[in-house]
Image (cartoon, rainbow, N blue to C red; front, side):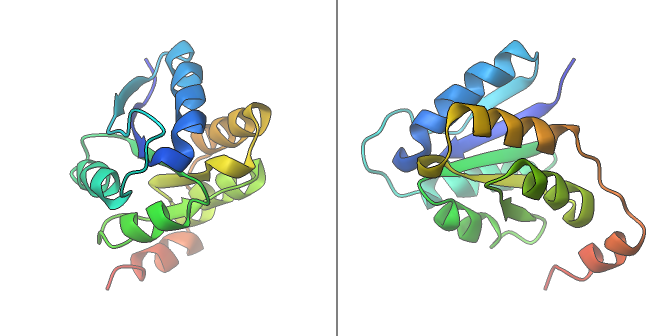
Length: 144
């Protein structure tokens, strides 16, 4: 059995999210899509806040958010005290977000990545583990 993963985002990340859902379904993860469900213009916070709340409440192992640049969804998610959202545009950055920052929400810039890059980034994040140690001390200082 895989991870319980929350997914969501806006119209700018819809195509990337659709690809990632298909990919993760084949890997046997349990998925919940918080929307949006098409490419019509929407307000990303409407989808980000329910996802972030669910991750904060430990209903999911982690979340993945998608938008055009990933900036808006990342900023919105990080308003939640227990969320550590990180933008990743390479596999190495995705792994480091988990290894060093214990990121529990990965933010994907959907308009800038092809399917191969998306697959590498998502798998890199999923397969990484938090290293703890000196990183835990820093992560403990993140919430206000």
